[in-house]
Length: 287
Image 1 (cartoon, rainbow, N blue to C red):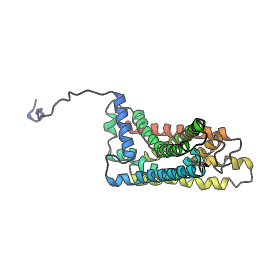
Image 2: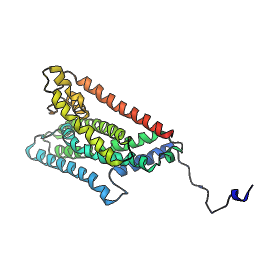
Image 3: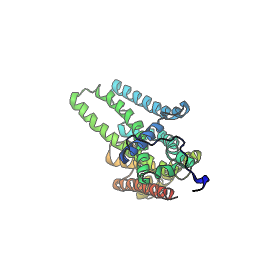
C-alpha cells in the first residue's frame, strides 16, 4: 500500500444508537413537512403568510359563528365555507408546496434521501400527507369553530347538536376533497422546478387561469355543455362534487345529472397527478 492510500483515524465515532425503521423515517418527513407548512422551526418571515391565511379563515369562522348565535340562521354551510375560502388556500399551497419539494430539488439533497432504504413513493407519500393535512387543518379548524357556535346556541337540545355534527362531518369530508386536489396539483407543479418562485407562479396560474374557461363554456347554448363546464377547472370540479353530494349547498354551479361525472373526474385528476409525481421522482431517484 502506498503512503498516499493510508487510512488515518481522525476521530469519527461509530453510531451506536437505535436504528429506526421505515415508519419512523416516514413520520419524520411528514412531521417536518407539516411544521414547514406553518413555518415552525423557521424564521419569523416564513410564518407570516401561513398564519395570515389561517388568521383570516379563523376570523371569518368566528364572525359566522357569532352571527349564527345571534340570528339563529345559517349564513354559510360548512361546505360553502370551504368553497368560499378555497380562493385563499390557492396562495397558501403556492407558497408551501415549493417549500416542501422545490427546495430539496434546488439543494440537490434527494440523492441523500434515496441513498437510504427510502423509496420515492415513501418520500412523496409523506410530503403529500403533510400538505393535505395542512390544507385540511386550515379548513377544518374554522369549520369546528362554526360547529361550536351552532351547537351551543341550538334550541333543539341534543338532537340539534347531533344534526349539526352530521353537517360538520359532511363539511370535513368536503374539505378533505379540497385538500387532496390542492395538494396533488400543487406538488406536481412544484416538483417540475427547483426554483420556488416559478413553482409558485405555476400553481397560481393553473388554478386561476382555468376558471375563466368555465365561465366561457357555461354560456354555450347547449344545456349539457353548460352543466359540464365545471370540468374545465379543478376548483369547479370539487364544487360540483359538493353540489352533488350535499344538494343544499348554494354554489351557483349547475351540474344537472352529471354529479357522478364530476366525482369520477376529481378522482381521476388526483390519481393522475400522483402517478405523474411518482414517475417524476423515480426518474430523479435513478439519477
